[in-house]
Image (cartoon, rainbow, N blue to C red; front, side, top):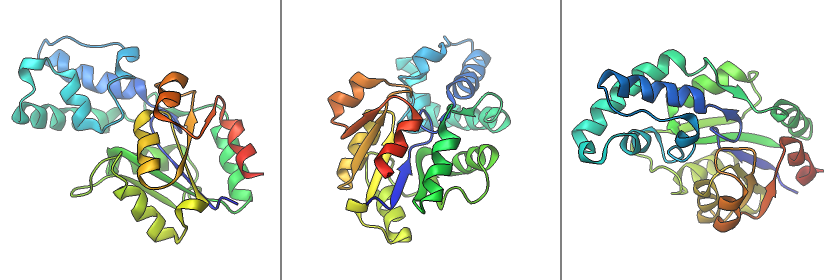
Length: 216
């Protein structure tokens, strides 16, 4: 019986691509640089917002100083709008209620900066739904390094074989396997079934309601 389910945030629990894209585009527009549509941003997110900024900048501008400065400006934009259009995927709330009723521990592990991950979760979900919410913190490697997952396991006292990780990208699959945990690939997210299959997801589901089948 699984006792812990760790969720990725963007593309798994919430559809945040519009707010992310709008925030990056706002900074790019200030410098009259090319912008991107939401579909393009779906393939640019997943490895943290610094990497998102690096991918959005023209290749000749991808210096450490530029990435750092554009990321600072992105953070200012995103802080203002991170809850403008971001919403939980349909069916997520019901699935979370089902899991809580069965005493499954729930956690969020995101490559999004910790302050934004916590703001989004607290703004969109009831208090107490998640036992732990953690994003990118200084000195902690981003996924697919398993450090963030190992920290959650330590705090909850749950073993890897009693845990599942749910995510929408190959990053989540690799993170799970690096931690010795099985991964649920969420087809409704940003990347789709093909990427999840190629990465080796242990389960692939097309609707949040299907999460409940793994915990009955």
